[in-house]
Length: 428
Image 1 (cartoon, rainbow, N blue to C red):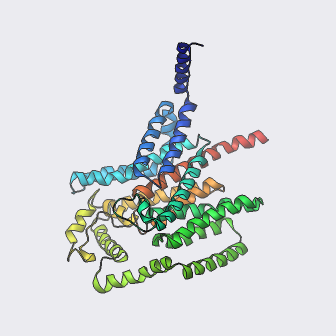
Image 2 (tube, helix red, strand yellow):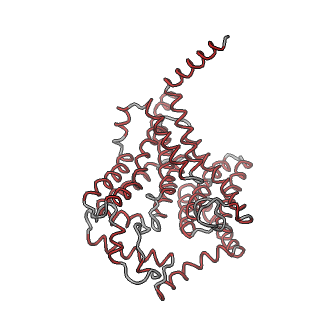
Image 3 (cartoon, helix red, strand yellow):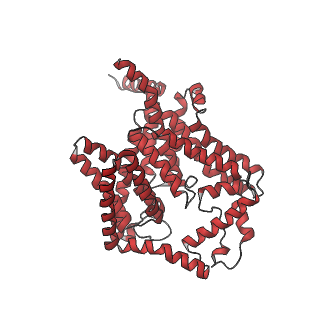
C-alpha cells in the first residue's frame, strides 16, 4: 500500500470514528476518569477535563431524550438552586461583580444532570471511582513522604504538615470518603470468601485512616467518620456484627489516641479554641464559626423569605463588624461556613427548601443495594454533615466530589433500574 493510500485510509478511519456515537461516548468516559483522577491534585486540570468532557457530549446528544431527562426531580433540584442564585442577583444590593462571583459556585451543579444522563447509558462508571481511589492512594503516599521531606511540597503559600497540594480539609474529605466506601466491597468480598482481595482493600482503608490519625488530622473528619461508619453498619451489618466491629473500632481509636500526639493536639483544640474565643474574643477556628453563625442567623431573620440576594453576605458582615482586626467580632467574610446559613442569608426560606430538597432527592435515589448505591449514598451523607461546618456544596473541591459522586453513581443506578425489567423478561 502506498503512502498516499495509507493516509487516505487513516483519514477515512478517523472520519468514521468522528461519526460514531460510541467513540464520542468512550471519549467522555475517559475525560470523566481524568477529571476524577485530577481532583485530589489540581483545580485547573479538573476545569480543563470537565470542559472537554462537556464539549465531547454534544455530537451524540439526543436533545429530546436529554430534555425529558431534565424533568426528573433529581435533575431539576440542582438546576433550581443555580437558577435561584442567578435570579437572586436582581434583589441584591451588592456590587455586580460580587453578585456574579457568588453565582459561580452553583454553576457546577449544572454538570450533575449531565453526568446522570451520560452514565445511565455508559458501562464505565466504575472507572471513574477506581481512578479517584487510586489517585487518593497516591496522594496518601505523597503525604507521608512530605512529612519526612517537607520541601517536596508543591502547595503554594508555605509548607503545611503532610500536605503536598491543596489543604488538610480537602485531603481529609478525600481520605474519609475512600476509607469508608471501601467498607462495602470488603464486606461483600468476605461473604464470598475472597480473603486476599478483601485484605488488600482493608489495608488500603487502614492506610487512609492512619494518615488522618498520624499525619493530617481534620476536625471535620473526626466528627463525620463515626456518622458515616454508623450508616454503613445500620444498612449492611447485623446487630452482633455491629457490636463486634464497634468494640474493635473503639479499641483502635483508643490505641491511636495513645500513640498519636497529632490526634490528641487536634482534639484538644476543640475546647481550647472555644475558651480563647469566649474569654478573649480571639479569632480561633471554632470561635469564628460561632461568630459567623450568630450573625448569619440575624441576617436571615431580617429577610427570611427570599434573603438579601446573591453575593450580599460580605457586605452584611462589613456593616456589623466591630472591634479590631484581631477580634472574632471584627472578622468580615463572604461565607458563614455553614451551607444552610450560606443559602439562608442570600435566598431565605426559598433557598433552604431547594437545598434540602436536593439533598433529600439524592438520598432517595440511592435507596437500593449495590456498590453504586453505597458510593452515592455516602457522598450525599458526607456532604450533608460536613456542610454543618463549611459550605461544602459550594466549595470547589468538595462541590466537585459531590457532583462527580452523585452524577456518576446516580447515572449507574438509574441505568440499572431501567434495564432491570429487561433482565427479568430475558430470564422468564
